[in-house]
Image (tube, rainbow, N blue to C red; front, side, top):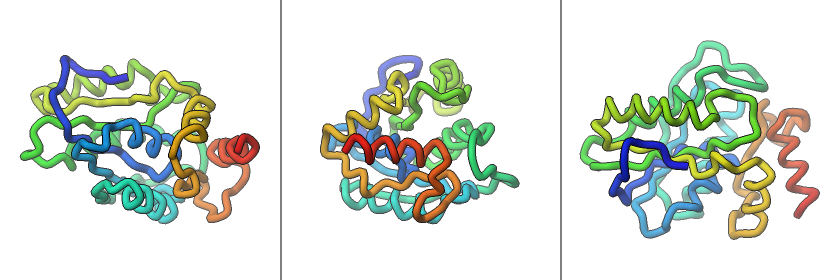
Length: 194
């Protein structure tokens, strides 16, 4: 799904690339001929170092420019919802877009099947309205996985050229995976299917 006031004639995309499966798949859905750039945001999450490494590896493998922004949230939970996370990521990404880029597609791997309000179509639409005001319509949010479930994403990744070994997913930041968080449970489903 792409939200926005109108069609954006852009071939520049800034992808919020966490290093996980969802953002990697979202990146692969962009035309390789586009000017694609990856942005990793370290907001103090427990898995930041391992996510950063995976994000860099994915960018390198796909030939995408990579950069990082460091922010700070006072208390980031080890697992579960981080209230305001996607709003923060959209705001940081918008601030990171260079003024001379012209129009830009801001790509995120948000998907359905989660209880978080900041992964809903309504959230994306409201975020787009705010960006339309701030960017004069020059930044458009694209969440191509918004109608996909995690199973859809995994099926797509396993059936395409997405190298899941490059990704990292564990909310606790455990190098081997804690085995208990939703991200680790998703990894177990991948291992069973592959």
